[in-house]
Length: 214
Image (cartoon, rainbow, N blue to C red; front, side, top):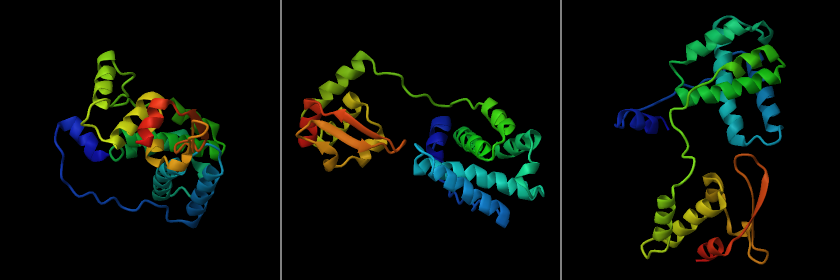
């Protein structure tokens, strides 16, 4: 992902070896607290495993920072200390990393029931460097349909495009989709969403069904 960001920002791909160090707390106190936080997230409804893992990293960084400042108990933290911690990470985390870090820190603040710290992290915002395209233009949609109906597209690619275009299924769910998720008799696609962990059922429209069958 960092290579992709570098390409968008500079137009070049820097071929460099990145060997991140292992970030983890050193003391038993903070290791135990980290494990408790991860267990709490894993038992929380609608939080995917990938989200749990992404929230764990900024808390590891926080605990390392607290240890380096001789803070031996989480009760000693305050907003000033948290501001200093964020400032120390700005040179390490890019915008995406900082945005993800704030999400994890907000979740942790709620876990330790520190509403003052939660409100501090909630008040911080990180500008997005890239934006999701809100919709396709008519010309783009017509171009897609022309491509779909041509002889040059593979059956697999056609099915993927139609799943995206017609059903709006997330890319991660399309990747994980299996044949037994499709009920051909009832014309329904049913699966568990990768991001939220929620079950979802959507109608299997003829155009999509024919592409999947092919």
